Amino acid sequence: MFTNISYHSYNLIPKIELHLHLEGAIPHYALWELCQKYGGDAAVPSLEALVKRFEYIDFPHFIQTWVWKNQFLREYEDFTFIAEHVARELASQNILYAEVFYSPPDFFRFGLETQKITEAIRLGLSRVPEIEIALVPDVVRDFGPQKAMQTLKEIEEVKDMGVIGIGLGGSEHDYPPEAFESVFEEARCLGFHTSAHAGEAAGAESIWGAIRCLKPDRIGHGTRAFEDEALLDYLVEHQIPLEVCPISNVCTGVVSRIEDHPVRDYFRRGILVTINTDDPTMFNDSMAKEYQTLGESLGFSLADIRKLVNNAVQACWLNEPKKLQLSQRINDDPAWDMDPNPQT
Image 1 (spheres, one colour):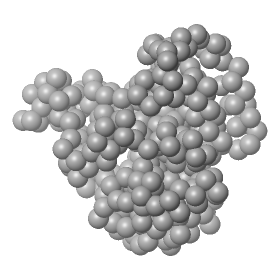
Image 2 (image 1 turned 120 degrees about the vertical axis):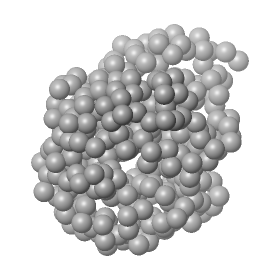
Image 3 (image 1 turned 135 degrees about the vertical axis):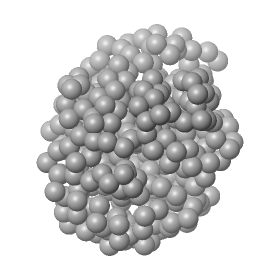
């Protein structure tokens, strides 16, 4: 069954996002302002050219574009600026709660410190009280485990600024998870939750490596888990949440087309699936678009969508009383009473 529900209706329903990179969610107009601040770039003579830049041949090309974009974040005030604008965009989509990655190691080249980046981001977020946003620094595998451990120690100094966990992103295909075992062990000892990107740019063996060595609370993406039936069974049995990002996976070439995405099979099997946008402005994406795409291209019903949102409550890192409050807000929202107008 496909659901004929408008984008506007999907935008109104309450949402949670658990896999969102701050630097990949900068509204185009805000990034263009930063480009102008630092003299622009020959490859982006206009806002339209900037938007066109966010088209990718494959995952490595996406990483190259990510690095290119980050050259326009050079001062602490830039992080305050983007944090406020990202938060306003999320609040406008009725996203009630988000756990947002940011990548301090990417900005060491500009002499920026992890602690002060965190302070600057929190300042920007504080200007948008309509949404609660927790922070999850990404220790970025490309810089190696020693730098990751250093970043972790720096993060520990500012954990009172709503920093609740760490992530491991970056070039998964070049930097396997096993090298970061001690970093994740130390993170748990410091009281942080953990998430690791796996099964995006590498296959099922990368997910197994993350599970066995890093023992993360959640897996970022997990797209290629279908390559190993035993892994799928393990994910069901242990209810390890997947931070699935369908449109991102199509844009970076991990999946050839949305109709081929395994998320429907994962959901039917009973894997704890959550839906996320990853880098929404780099993929012309939003949570409403994700849900609309699931309905129109993969046959998710409105009841399925509601289950996915509740999965995100279950998988998030709030304490149990706050989870209960959030669940009540979500399920009491009148936006769920829309007429889905089913088609057969």
